[in-house]
Length: 225
Ligand code: CTP
Ligand code: CA
Image (tube, rainbow, N blue to C red):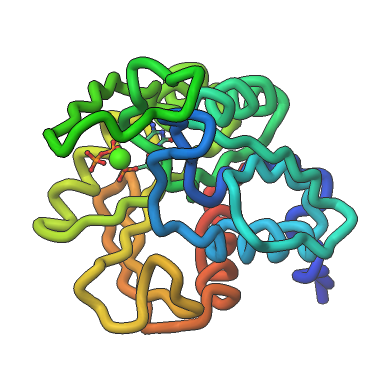
């Protein structure tokens, strides 16, 4: 009878994980951010490390800590910094899981001084697009690498997720719906579906983010050669 050590299922694997929000500076004291807590990405990092992987966790600003010694955390602030780190790490990784809530836009200019209240009138902030980290990794992905994305949609979830899967060259995409109670940003629980390149959609019940991380890792392992 063959014995298979399930607990070290990711031994010798190097996994890149992006997590948390990005902050896009407006001036020295202000930024554009989002509600991402980083909990899903950190749960994935711990679960991957516990299964024997070496994890490179590229993290936006969050109030979480990592416990496992095999997690190498690289702290970044902006989408541009996250892009640079992800592009550096990915070529030597076996897989990347992109759970970060990356800002799609940043202010065109960062004011060197704090912007003053000048009048009671309106103020315009011009935004320019950030690079798509997932799509950029999708372009350089080799045949033996796996790329996993997330999609947070408010409507027409599966249609949008299928589009992202294709556009970013992902192996599968994890959908979380904002419509479900107890799922998504800032929660300790999550309710996901996974859509893969075959077009198979698997729905999972509401679980803790630790348990959701295991479901995602099991799907990843099933696609590894
Ligand atoms: N993503 C990324 N870099 C970006 C934007 C998104 O790596 N600049 C990744 C996210 O981490 C996620 C996936 O792409 O894994 C989908 O993110 P999402 O914001 O849902 O997709 P967008 O292409 O930005 O589309 P949308 O207009 O719906 O925001
Ligand atoms: Ca986006």
